[in-house]
Length: 148
Ligand SMILES: [Zn+2]
Ligand SMILES: [Zn+2]
Image (cartoon, rainbow, N blue to C red; front, side, top):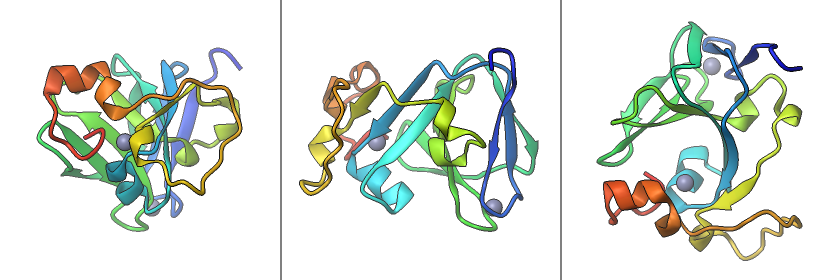
């Protein structure tokens, strides 16, 4: 598996991407903003630093979801695709479900647990963090209703 490009895209196929290396971080986020972005009780992301990821077909439609972040989706089919800090354009997170092989990239942490719905039970021993514990929040300041 090592060295194989990581590929993915949206449901309709209008947007495709490829990354040259494995993600640096894979995590769940339960925050309210991710719940709304995904339209689901939980979001999950694989993060690629250092301009490792490029779009090979189309591009997500992006919108500013907070003062410091933008999120992207397929303008044709609506698949949630990306999360980016606007001040860190070299880094991008993609939704795990958009990966061609999500089974290869298990999450290593939960974030945004202040937003976790009480009926969702995920039986793992992964670390669980509040959004406010994210070092990015210290950098960008409090006030967002979630991770940005
Ligand atoms: Zn699409
Ligand atoms: Zn979040």
